[in-house]
Length: 164
Image 1: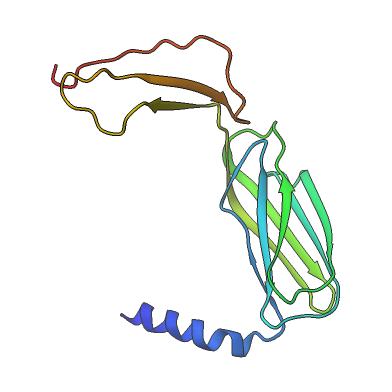
Image 2 (image 1 turned 180 degrees about the horizontal axis):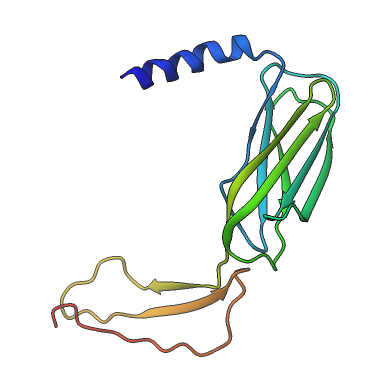
């Protein structure tokens, strides 16, 4: 109960204490070969141009990707997209550093970002939503790679009776 009251007080009183700062959200999980969205919003709208630098680092502080962007006005939240390299291995050893300057300054490093890889997806399409006993079941199966391109390799499909 105490945590709830403290949380509500911080939500209500937080903007009053933090008039000149940003709220920045960074994903906890990123996928190799995709983009990661970083959301930036000022507590109070800013009319001046803001420069944003987002850096993806590994555990040894080696830069893996960098995104620099100028946002002409932060009257509403902005999104900065950083490309995550295809070559990063899965794991928890990544950091993302976000720097915002112009009007207000913000510099924060987020640690323990998890990287995942996605190899394939399987999509199964049937001709009806509900079947009755004795109905003919027609289906199509499509395999895709991580970029949702259709795989040309043959798939082996096993169908089992759930009652056996």
